[in-house]
Length: 273
Image (cartoon, rainbow, N blue to C red; front, side):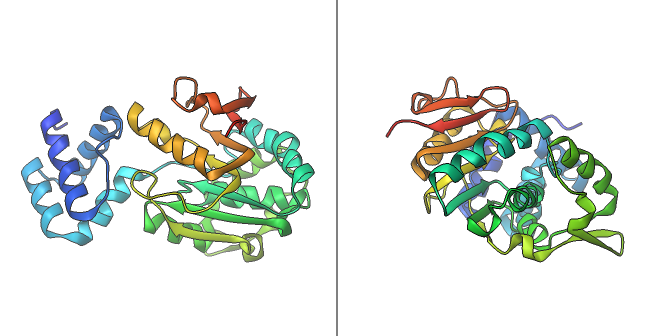
């Protein structure tokens, strides 16, 4: 395993930012280092050679960013969270609003977006929602828009779906084709996919619900504060924010503007302007 020091990581992140406007300068150091080491080993590169390749080969930068931002995800991950969405959060939104907007920030390959659409369909709210799904990695956005996933993943997804309170069989929402589960495109009719960088891009709309689960865990304290401020500004009063099970708002500067709706599942509500 190659050994990287802070100076190496800083040089890499500064080059990426200066030349391509990808800002990894405030990512959690341990996570950033681990992923850069994996890229070096996978491509059999030294640090000087990596810097040269990043500087001279823009196409490699896409691969590099994809490796840095890769997230393992699944449909209805953490079923108790989705049960809380079904029984607490979405009914609360319905009581206040006929039409509503959801932002999936850092949507990765789209399984969470698809899970939300299935849930909304089952509780009769799918026709009333506008969903924006964003990610830094355009390759992941292409996967999400294809709504195609390996059939080998469906056993776990179906088990999660059942534990999350699903009222049907997950299999009714997709067809099998060449070893893939191809989901019904009509589920995603109200979804807009767009590239958005939580670090450097500005807010672009207001929402009743923002989901950003297992993303901020890769950011340092300063960047987490910055991103939470963007979520605060993007949420309507009484709007909901959900984060990952290993993440917390407790120490963040803007935590005082949120109240915990479900502490176990890390669901919060904006209570102050």
